[in-house]
Length: 342
Image 1 (tube, helix red, strand yellow):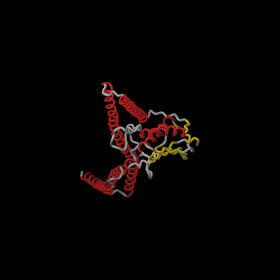
Image 2 (cartoon, rainbow, N blue to C red; image 1 turned 180 degrees about the vertical axis):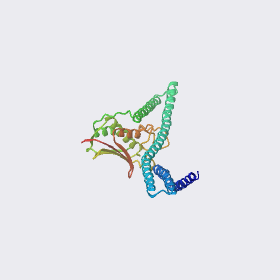
Image 3 (cartoon, rainbow, N blue to C red; image 1 turned 45 degrees about the vertical axis):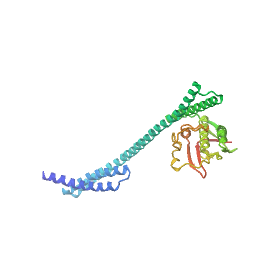
Image 4 (cartoon, helix red, strand yellow; image 1 turned 90 degrees about the vertical axis):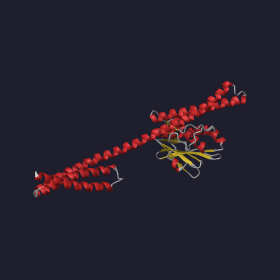
């Protein structure tokens, strides 16, 4: 019985020493990766067993041959245990990091969803209240002169069109987020798409005395969905015209790169705050707190235009970026699969 107690004390002392050393190492590794902590914990556990076995073997005065056999056996077991533990520890650490990233992404998505619902509700409630007031005024005969009645009718049509665009944007964005968007690529002359987009914003640009600049030649033909590509270009142009002050300039360029086609829309909006550059493609982000609908005919929706641009570009396997330039900012789209130049 005394020998058993002594063996237990020797094993406890050796294992405890290793455990104390491991605790010190873990304290020094604070702030390191989960994988590092996992490997250290595994090594402490295995080495505690090894130390206990070696201490007991030494206390039992084993022969040199028997002691070597014990050391080789426990060392081999320790190497295998630590190796297997390191492999699975890496997987565990990766899973933990992925799970945490997924939770953060889920929280961001949920926060964005709540913000979108609140903002869209505001953007719908405001014009609906105005529509109801104008409809009641017309119904009750509060307004009767032809000019006022015509103005009420015009405002009702404008607000109805704006809400219809907002609903269309929400539907398209829901398709993008649900992965239900199916792009059917075909050869699309980028020059024609840009020409149509410029015609669509020409009236607004003229009212703000903004100069639209586009090259006469050098436009590539790309393999893309024609409707989706037209939406990308028109949204980018409309965004630049909307935020560029009067007498500014909006320029659209395109070209061929080794990995595909690039298209850029540059403006003189004065630049985007550095803290907002990473958020301009977020759903419902406008770069401003005020949510009052604009009445300049810009077709401003719920802050969904650039989010739709990113979704459509990524559906083509491309990417879209934004950066500040000297007098404004530059949105650049890159799409794969160049066909020809025109």
